[in-house]
Figure 1: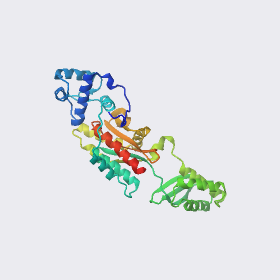
Figure 2: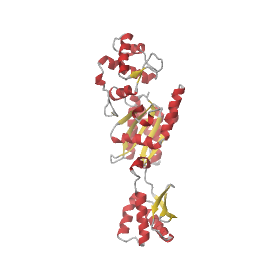
Figure 3: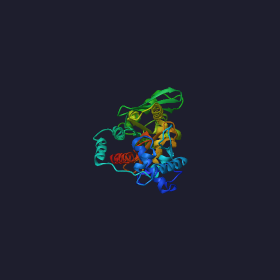
Figure 4: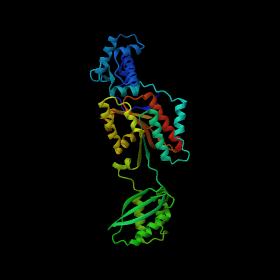
Length: 364
């Protein structure tokens, strides 16, 4: 296993806890299940195993694996499938990660070619590309890019309160409430808006903030005391970060592409209910962003399986995600996929990893 590619999420049972025969039986059972998506019986395993074991011996080993909580029998089937605990053991200790073909690499690079497009469009294309290649839903979380401004306006809404309206060069509009001195004349709001509009035209708030505050401090802005106070208050309010509990969701954009792919493997009413639950989970934007933010904590791909995260505990889904960094090496987002726990992890892990690396190169 390429330990540089997958970062373990948790482990309460190690591969070393299994002796050689149970380990081989378990590995081949999981690989057969991930390949076919059906319960695996002793006869199938006897044909796959390089060991000379009778079906009866295999059944005994499977019974032991079941007692360990690594496999179980769904419904009345004679075959077995891995539990979430078993899948975690397999992914962390047995998964043989392949490499992408040159065609797959080229496809990812071509689809992500910036070619003058807004970078958010490139990110959306990255999620779509990953969705198409994996036949799962593509997910991407990115930091919001601050937009250069075209115009600023202050609207008095109540005593002591005004609405700051920021219009971006891309047509976007953002509103924030600011505090104002009581009894403030309308002319002061107009003067403050005109001053900020002139200073911020074609620039981001971050780029101009220091210069504006320095001018006010040094009294070079030719503003009266009340107007300068409004400008300073407006700059402080508009630059403020959300409170801790809402920071991740407020500062991030979430892109989801290809959710319809999750319907491809629906074969029974229970599968349909699982996918419906998953769609509901995806709609909970803040929780999904919080989950993906965990993948920002280090290098490599993270794999979250089923109930390991509370968001997907009912839908029985897996998330494979990797962070991507900007030119300075700062992690600025996460890309990945979500699908059923029966994923081709060996193929999807390097696919997510390579896509994250290509995005990083584009940012550089």
